[in-house]
Length: 130
Length: 238
Image (cartoon, rainbow over all chains, first blue to last red):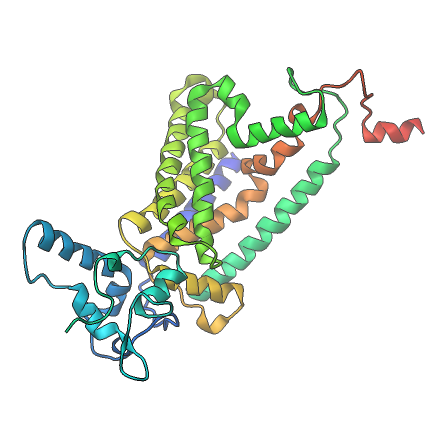
C-alpha cells in the first residue's frame, strides 16, 4: 500500500510541475542573434510580423506565398522573398550588396548554425533586384 | 525559468553520467560463475564480437523470437538513434543540412515503434500479465518526449537558433546568455528529457549498457577448450 501511495505522489508531483511549466507566462526572450544579422533586423521598426513570429515561422510565410502565387495565381500576398532581401541584405564598403546566402549573412548565418537547408536561392535572387 | 532549466540539466547530466558509470562498474564486478552462452553460440571471441554486434544493431535474437515485437522495437531504437544524431546540431557545428534535414522523419519511426510496444503491453495477454508499472511508465515517457519533439518540427516551430544559443551558453557556463525560448512545448519536452536522464541509471533502460555484460551473450561456447572459472573461485583455489 505504501508503494502505491508513493507512486501516486510521484505522478501528482510530475503533473504539478508540468502544469506549472505550461502556465508560466514569460516575457518574450530578447536574445540577440550573433549569427548573420542585418541593419533592418537591429532596428526597432517591425517586419511584416513581429520578431518572435518571424524567427519561428518565416519559412511558412514564404512557402505560403509560393503556393498561393505560383499554383493558385493569387498575387499580392503579404510576404514576398524579394522584399525580405531588400531590407535584410548587407552591403560591403563600396555599397555593393552581399548575397544573403553567403556565409555569415542574414539567411546563411542562422541556417548554417543549426544545419537547416536553404534552398530558396537555387531559383531566387540573393541580392535586391530593384 | 531559463536558469531553473539550466540547473535541472546540470543535475540530470551529472546523475546520468555518474549513475551509468557506477552501474557499469557494478556490472563488471558481478560474478559470472557459470558458462551459459545461449546455444548455438560462436566458439571464438571474434565470433562473440560478431554475434554481439548483430544483437545490438539488428536485435537478432528478438527477430528470431517475436517478429512483431522486433518490428516495433527496432523501428523505435533506430528512430531514437537517428533523432539523437540529429539533436547533435544543438551541441556542435559538424552536422550539414543534408543530414539534419532528412533525419527529421525518424521521429515517426520512433513514435510508431513506441505506440506498437505500448499496445503490445496491454493487448497481448501473456505480456500484460508480466508487465510492471515501470514498463508502461518508460514507454509513455519516451512517447511523450517523441511526440512533443515532433510537434516542434512538424506542427508548431520552435526558435531553433534560440535553443542552440541557450545550450551553447549552458555548456560554457555562460549564465548571462542563458535565455531559453519561451515555447511551452519546448519546456515540456526538455522537462521530460531531464526526467528521463534522472531515472535512467535506476531504470530498465539500463539494458543499453547491460546487454554487453549478459553472460548468455558475451560468452564463447568453448567449455571443453577453456576451463571456465569464476574470479572468486580462482582466488579460492590458490
